[in-house]
Length: 109
Length: 122
Image 1 (spheres, chains in turn blue, red):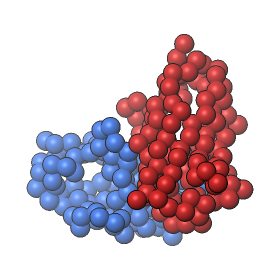
Image 2 (cartoon, helix red, strand yellow):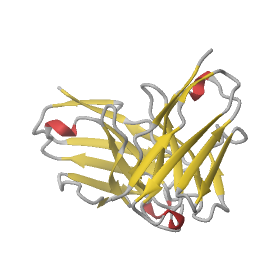
Image 3 (cartoon, helix red, strand yellow):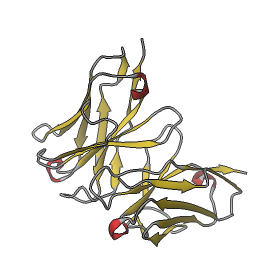
């Protein structure tokens, strides 16, 4: 089972700044099948990025994903007030379980 | 339009059983892997189980193997999760979700229900 570790646990930034979130895997994620989700309080998660760098339908281009192997990054440029949420990575490249990271909370500074 | 609606949550005594359901619409249910995920209060997402389109293949997280049973009814576009021997740490919001790609478990999850809350307490 691939274990995903996200850092930092909490990131405090101001609107307009850029955010860099990290997701590290305990072993290489096959085919870079790594996704990122955004979750706001009281809501279900929303798919942002899949295949490490492909934006899901309707996701603004200020969200970008990068990385390969064991190290992946979600970058959010020009933070908007609605971007402050919890972000999770998930790998789906190995046989299930398709594990999630523990999450990074992006909060307003 | 794709919709997933979970039901069946509630207050349950420790040791009891519960069946959660997920009613779907807006897509060809029988083409997709479906997944259950849960989230304990104030905690992160935990992947639980998924089932193949025809229901012939299932996968479980080690933490729930033997207590959770996933199933589906493609005639009625419904997904289920039977939870037995409920414990306090099963208290969570339970989500069903659809795979982005059809016919494969190697897929992110693009549509999620709103979740159903299960509380295990005496």
